[in-house]
Length: 206
Image (cartoon, one colour):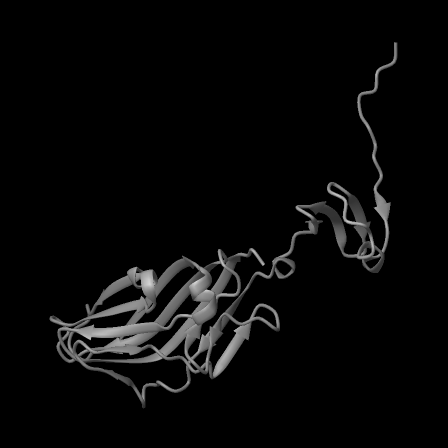
């Protein structure tokens, strides 16, 4: 008695141009020059190879060139301001992506439920370090809860490096309006400069 112990199924091999003319049928498979595709949920989904750029993922680093050691952003006690970054120099994992609007100083959310990691780096000092701290947060709606209080540990008027990471997803309001990064000195005045934003999209629903 002979039993089958394995099966070999060979899918169609066509070009991407031909695949785009196929009738959409749930569960269909095809191999093209760009990879292996199937129809799921009424649209073509790429199964292999999975690449970051193919999923719309990537990262961008924005270096501010306006607030520098010779032109520091002044912070008054209790006054909330935008932690602006002009993106004077920008590095990208691939061309054509942006997660921050350097004109309006706003984080960009492309599609609801996308997930991002934001790293904020800057230098700061305070003349009354023992009583002063900095509040840094995303200044829109419920996102304001992504707030961190930063203490000055090095003493009065000493330059201190700050580095903080925020993880967030975007809703429709965020997509429509964007969101600014804001900062406030509490307990005394302070100065900020050499601002860097490193933003990575880690999950995409586009």
